[in-house]
Image 1 (cartoon, one colour):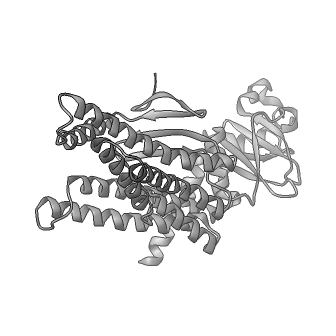
Image 2 (cartoon, helix red, strand yellow):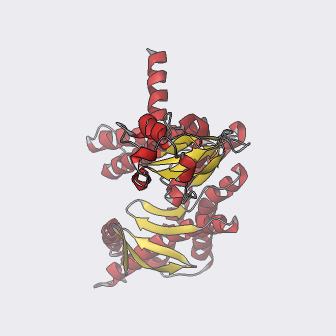
Amino acid sequence: MNNNGNNLQIGNLFGIPFFINPSWFFVLGLVTLSYGSDLARFPQLSGAVPWLLGLVAALLLFASVLAHELGHSFAAIAQGIKVKSITLFIFGGLASLEKESETPFQSLLVAIAGPLVSVLLFGIFLLINTTLSLPAPISAICQLLASINLVLALFNMIPGLPLDGGNVLKAIVWKITGNPNKGIIIAGRVGQFFGYLAVGFGILGILKILPFGSFWTLLIGWFLLQNAGFAAQSATVQDKLDGFTAEDAVIPDSPIVPADLTLRDFANEYVIGKQKWRKFLVVDETRHLLGEVFVDDLKTVPTSEWTQVRLTGLIKPVSEVTKIAATLSLLEVVKLIETQNIKEMVVIKEDQEVLGLLEKTSIFELLQQDAQGEAIKKA
């Protein structure tokens, strides 16, 4: 049994790692007790039988949630998207996908696949209950599972993230605007609205001011607020990044030097009193990359010869450098940095002219400057 954070892996489903959050066991016990108490009212059930049937009903409920997430997963797999995991937790389930769908329509298909599975299960349990002559307790379980799957489908279609309806709204806005981040931002804001609504109903219900609303309503509202807010905030940052290019985030004092410098000029202008860079990229007169030179290599040449020796004598082939186009969006740059664990990149134009280096810190600084500029405009 593997541990992924606080989640426990209990196996694989169709090649998808299946995890259970510890909170799931609490809900399993709670649901078992609740269903068992209801089933204990049937006179034909005695002893531990109601609680055993309650456990079966609870497991079937979570199997329905799992089927819901598998619906999302199979829709994603059909699009060539890898499903990293499925996790059951206190509020239901979550299918973690490797990436976003490529088109709004494909995103819509993934979003509605889960609720469609729940509607299908609702129909199956309803059909079983109405066409077969079942013992009263079993009929009650089928009726319960039918109702739960219908509620699961309807609740998930609320048009706010992180619910499926929020992903549907995101796909619609994406189609209209052509920007997936705009869809996430709007769906996230709607999700926050419903989150505040649920929190309010929960508090008023607990205080007996309203006839509905409970502690669970409050928890669900808090869950919506946390996840919808994070999604909207993340999308806002991504949308901002998509508005900049790699050229915008080039480090102003990038360690780039011309090849025709003498070692003395190089030391005086770039090294002495300046400890930031220990390695420099060397370019020719057209700013095409020739190689790199290390500050420590200056020690290999006597200082008396520094005025005669040029940097070309110390140039080494560039190692472990990633070149990116100046026009590449910063959003794509960040994705490269995160997925390939790249520390720095060389930004070049179409004609191979080197513009400078780009690092994570230079991206952060650019965003900070932009935020400060926006704040000044608003003031």
